[in-house]
Every structure is written in C-alpha cells, then in structure tokens.
Image 1 (cartoon, rainbow, N blue to C red):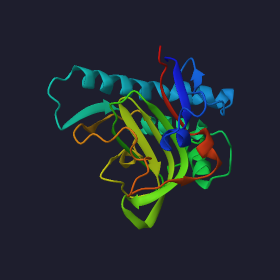
Image 2: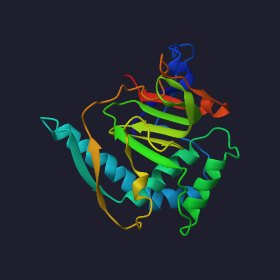
Image 3: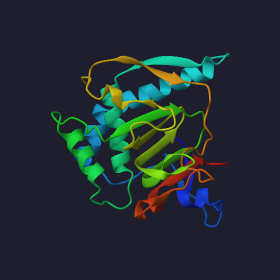
Image 4: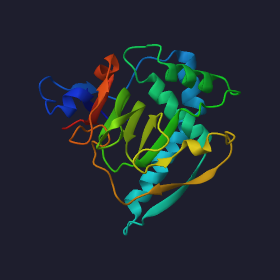
Length: 230
C-alpha cells in the first residue's frame, strides 16, 4: 500500500480539509479495532478474493480503449460479501452496540449463520484515487425526497469499485451484491459492473439540495484519504 494523507469525512465535506494538517499513514488507511485472531481469519480467508477482484477490474478499466456499458467479472460473491463486511466492521474509532454490527459479527464468525435480509450491499464503479470510509449515518432513502430515510451502516470506496451497506431494498439504481448471499463460499459468478454513468467522487455522502447526512461519534473516525503528495 502507498502512503496516504487523510482527513475526517466532516473536514472534507465541509470544505475545510486544511484547517488541520492531514494525518499521514505510510501504508494506506488503517484501523486497529480487530484482535489478532479475527484479523487473521478475515485477512487470510476473505481478503484475497476482494484484492483479486479489485486488481482484476482495475486492469480491465486501465486497458480498455472504448468503454462498454457493462462488463462481467468472475468472482466468489459469498467471500466478497464477507470481506467487505469485515472491513467495515473494523472501521470504527468507537466500538458500540449497533444491532447491525452484532448481526454482521454473527454472520462472519459462524459459518451456519445466514446474513440478515435487512443488510444489503450495493456496488458501483469508482474510477478515483481517493479512499473513503464512512460508518453509521442516516441519509434520505431517495435523494431529493425527505419523507423516508435509510440507515447506511457503511460506505467503502477505493479504486476501482465502491460499496455501500444499508437497510434499503434498493438505492439509486445500484447493483446489489447481496443477491448472492446464499451461495457457497467456493461458488463463482460473473457479476455485472456498469461502466457508464460514473458517479461523482464524493457520491453518495456529498451534501447538496437533495441530500444530507447525520451520524454519531463514528463520523469522527470516518475518513477521506488520497495518495500522499510529493
């Protein structure tokens, strides 16, 4: 991993990231919230699939001359789901008793536990160098409509794919990864990745006339990072 400079997501979204000096991390965005046993279980069992998925899709994006509307990439979705949830579970500065986290822990550390239907993972192409991690926020379920809200357990964005974990049946037309929740770990599927209609780099957490974001203490440990400037 390359060195990054990072600020809190609040500093970034309020447009004042230079009010305090960015924190430098020599090997990417790191959280120290998992014990050695849990870290090894997640890292050895699940992360290679997530890493290979990112590297493979990234190579495709860098090599294509004419961008097609959609590509398909073969992966193991059941493992991909576990790796994403594991990273978001660890991405907290304050360990609390959020019910969603309890359900994620049961799912990750008991192979017989099925992922709750309340937990949905959506994904989209993310052709940017910035890394964004956001935990436990509330936003409108439909941008521009303030009559219904969703609980967004996590947003994880880094090149070339971004992920969003929430309790909504769908969100802004994104593809859903959790439709594969009942596959066996070893099963492979070619999942679709839409390449047209690229979202803004600060989407969906950006605040504008159609969106706001509210959260608790863990907003202070939610980060926006970019490669360190020379």
